[in-house]
Image (cartoon, rainbow, N blue to C red; front, side):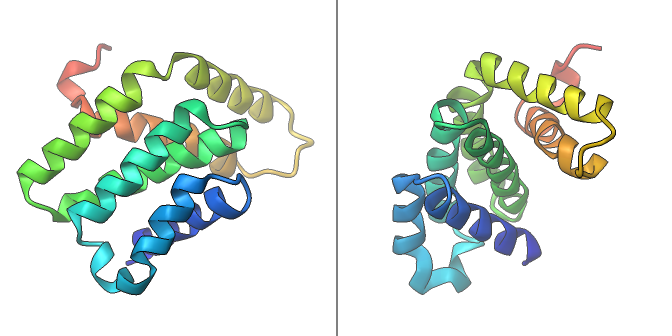
Length: 150
């Protein structure tokens, strides 16, 4: 349930901080059914669709990073769904995010590298690498370890 709460908080942040109206719609539609949302392919599909778009088109790097983390949280929650539902969500993430993430991925990697090299920043190792770790987890979940070259 902690992953669901983290995803819900992230959707709220995308709406309230980043002004993402699609995230607002997901929250508004599902706020009455939060108890069933975590195990719902419909909810996870709506969240993936919204966050995948924001990971590419978000106005700020912060919104794109939050969205990538959110998509990975969705895929983690999807592990409790039937295998066919997991595959549908993985295909959506692959087509809508991972195949088109070049420039955002480069910026996220450059930012994390800069933060790691600049020890005077008030950020933990975990915080600065979270978007990269989420991106790697998405690749492993959606493409498969055997498909990723060494």
